[in-house]
Image 1 (cartoon, rainbow, N blue to C red):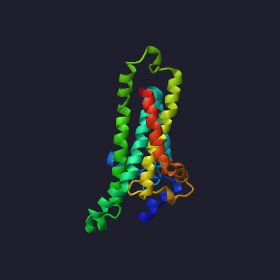
Image 2: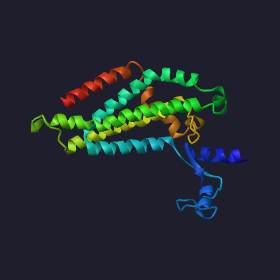
Image 3: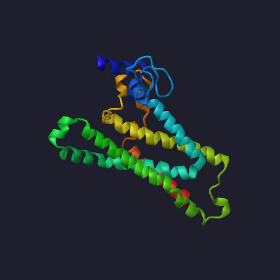
Image 4: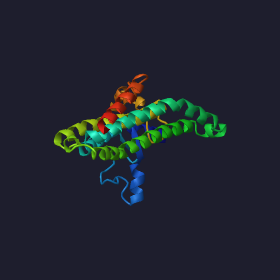
Length: 239
């Protein structure tokens, strides 16, 4: 019965990310059994709050777009190049990392946690991507330093036009970064307990969005070509 209660809310709402049961949080906060922490009423005590991965995906992309609007396209293009480079690095070293993880995982640990190795692989890929992207966001210091040696007419100008271009490049960065993180979890069968596979709900927006994730299109040799193209763009911008 308890297992059925857990499955029912996810199927009813098409939710993908699940949280703690509302009734448990209500008891911990000293409220009645029917009131949630947000002040709303939950009529089913066993109901879980869930959110679609697609909703997280689009909200994150909008956030990256706002950041790009404030920073301008000149600074954002370095982040794009960093994200492409990180995907290329991960693509090259993932088979070797997977082999090492499998060889060094004790059989008893594998029996106790079958998805543990996949979970560590996803965390490794996410760490590489986020670290390289972080340095991409710090990289505009190079552009500012190079801009001091230019004439005033050639320096990057914080105009409305540049801000709009920054918005577009920021949206692209969000699509690449969040889409890559989602893809790494997808190909590893969503090994985290707080993520329900969208493939369990084929009609959900999240399941339909998987076909449009960036790494589905950026297979070899397109990823290698993009690495060269974007770094040529960065060199032109800096020089």
